[in-house]
Image 1 (cartoon, rainbow, N blue to C red):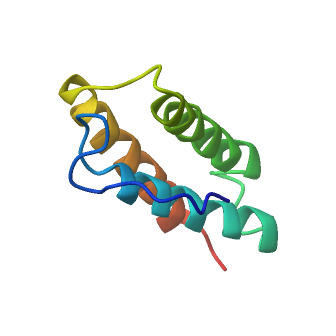
Image 2 (image 1 turned 135 degrees about the horizontal axis):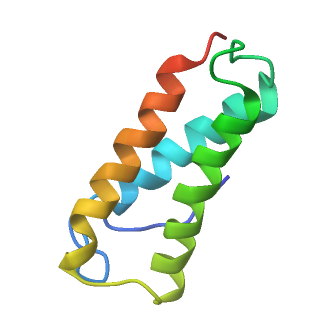
Length: 91
């Protein structure tokens, strides 16, 4: 889980970084505390993959490898993807 401070309005030229962090933290909590929260259609591996992909992007943003407004649509898609995974959880 990530507890660092990032701006949700402008972090290295990107928006919604804080929302992505929050979604990742929520999914991480479900993965850790409720590993059997997904049914046979969407298994734990799918949920962990969702977390890994979004987490990799978040790590690139924090390290400075990814920056600029060109990432705004990618960030929004990752937030949507992670939130969709969270909505599938049965906890």
